[in-house]
Amino acid sequence: MASHSTDDRSLTGAAPPAYIICYHAGMKEQASIQYTIRGVPREVDQALRRKAKLRKQSLNRLILDELAEATTGTQRHEDFSDLVGQWTRDAAFDRVVASQRQIDWEKWK
Image (tube, rainbow, N blue to C red; front, side):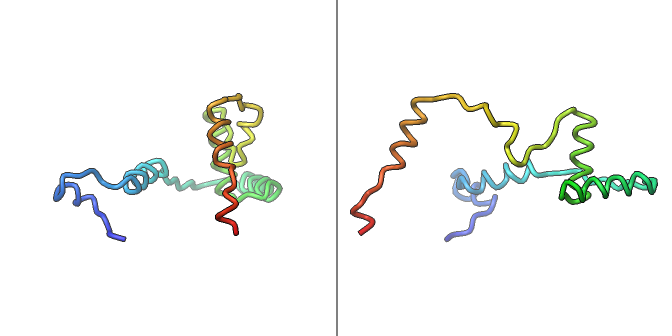
């Protein structure tokens, strides 16, 4: 597989491969800001650690969730529970999925 760099476009005039574009878009989405918090009272630390243990989360994940909920009123849903019950029927989608579920028995011999 050939390797591509962002300089390839300037040499060939061609757009970079889709996987390069997706990689860079994904990296921008993942950019995060780091905080260092000092002077956390012992009782706050203990309460956070207890809560993290009960939820079976890392302390960092719990704090991020708590900050998001306290500041924006939203919770992070890694289990997609916020999408439950949101599905709407789409005949075109159903046709595409049905066509992908066809088994070619000749290939399975």
